[in-house]
Each structure stands twice: as structure tokens, then as C-alpha cells.
Length: 211
Image (cartoon, rainbow, N blue to C red; front, side, top):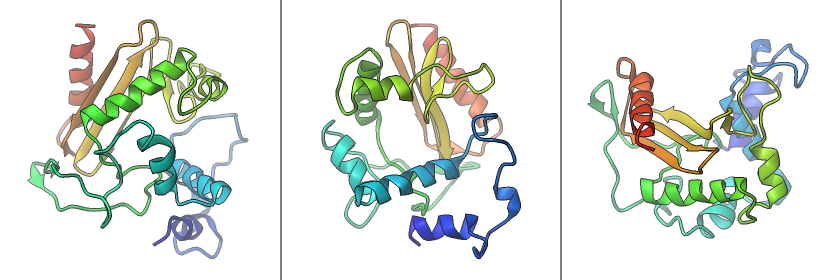
């Protein structure tokens, strides 16, 4: 199913999954709520504005320039040579793909993702690279209130910038420190265990002590 059809089914009055509760009653800019569907809509906007498929767009403007050769969305045209088995409640789960590729399903490794995060750090420090400095300033600027702690798709607070998340069988935690640019990336091939996000956060905080 194309992502455009998925979004239409979610938000169009004629959509299969349409529900008024899918919409916020708050005025834009007056509150904050994390939204995976917001990321998918942003991916669709990029497709409509550029005339390119989002996955191809990311390949052209991010993965190729940064030589992230072991990263991408799984497909018949791409699959890495070495892949970790993913686990859910301790059981291995089958390979899968997401319709909502704007919010997840991306495959990478520590070496490749480090290239990406280092590039973001350089942009935060004023270097033009895959984005210009003005775009980095807008994307990574301090939030308008202490309640949100978010920039544009990045978590931002007084000490660090990054993002954490999960898909079935995967949890990730990647942040860099604003004062010295050092970063930590934690990728875990297990999800839905008891206290899983707390455990990943504890790994991150332990590594942080040595930075």
C-alpha cells in the first residue's frame, strides 16, 4: 500500500480507519504530542514537493553523500550482507517491512549511523554539509517551552540533542552532548521485554559517565 493511501485511509472522512480522535483539538503551536504519523505526512510532503519517492530522496541526498553504504529500507533492491536476528519477548521474529517508511523500518549499523550523527553535530556547530547552517539552526533550535523538549524531529534539551525509538525487535538511543559534541549510539535487537526502554536508557547513562 502506498503511504499516500495509508494516510488517506487514516485522515480522510471516507478512509477505512477514519476517526475524529485521529485529530487534535488544540490550536497549532499550543501543545506538543509525539506523532509517528506526523513523520509519515512529512515524508509524503517531501515526495509531493520533490517529485521523488521518499526512500530514493533519502538515498540521493543523505545516504550516498555520506557513504552510508550499509543503510536503507529493506526491499528487493537492497538488503545488507549481515543482519541481526530481531527478538520480541525473547522470541525471534520474521523479517518485515513497514508501509509507514517515514517513521521507521530503516536498517543501519553503528559505523554508518555514526557518519550521520557526526554530520548533524558538525551542522549544529555551524558547518554546511547535507543541510545549510540556517536549516540546522531551525531544526535543532531550543524548544519554545520546557514541556516539549523537541526541535524538528529531534529531542532537544539543555544538555543534549538526539532521538530514541523502537520498531518490533529494535530499540535505539542516539544523542550528542551540546557542550563538547561527543555522541553515544545504542542499538538493541530486542524489544517488548520488561522495562526494555529503561534498560536501554541505563546503558546510555552508564556510557555517559565515561564521557
